[in-house]
Length: 287
Length: 68
Image 1: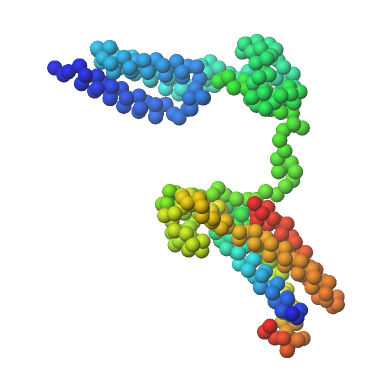
Image 2 (image 1 turned 30 degrees about the horizontal axis):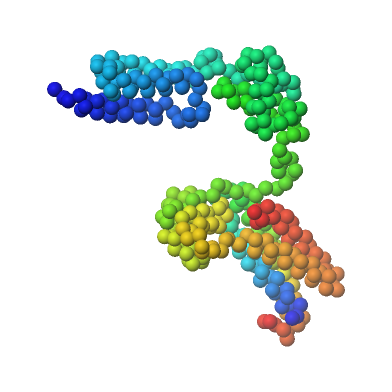
């Protein structure tokens, strides 16, 4: 017969493995996103697992049966709620509209048992202090209040201002903790010898770099372990921009200096062309 | 400094700019960004073409400064 402590040890290990596997399967919802039913299920499974592992439920088969029920039922409910919207609303609740067209819907407020004071406090959490700025507010199933501001109160975007914004892909991390990350280099279509030549330009070695990132145009930004060392930041883009501006000014100067009408026009056209280039590249080169 | 050498200097800096733009166009992984650089590199190339003609003309007019 095994000693009691050994049984507890083995059972605990078993429970740990089972819970770990099931939690991985249940998906990666954060605790803050857990609904009330998730919470209850979590406590129930935890309690059963603890009871089994401490040998308080002596019949292992019954214990596992109970645990399996609590673990599998949520998966089934999850599956059904993915398939059917009605079922989903039944289990997880539906969102409730609290403010519509700028008017508070008192009946719905009562339904979710909210007082006016609580609504205001939730709005303040969203940085809305003036209820007159709210066009639409809705309470999510998990109790969060989402707010849509009136169009004139929403933060301005470059699109509204018709600004050009730089087009760029995501930057790739190529050095982490002094090691070269080959995956990042591959994603950008670069290789180790490119990185080596880039580092040689800045006079650095891989071992001294904590983080190295390449932006979509291929400029390398590095952060060193030793913060006392000043690293020259990539200035190629700023230089290109400045040079373009200088060339444009030069061309205009030549246009003024020459007395030949035809040549003057040629210079002016060239200057105009450069200023188009500058306008188009400005968002790209000045970041 | 003669006009010829000034124009040559502008031509040289612009060549550098074009080379960098071409490099960015090659390196960029984003298709839109690539095209943006390629398009502007072409515009710069046409300006360079004009400057080249000017330099040839100036060297013809002032052969004593040729090469400066």
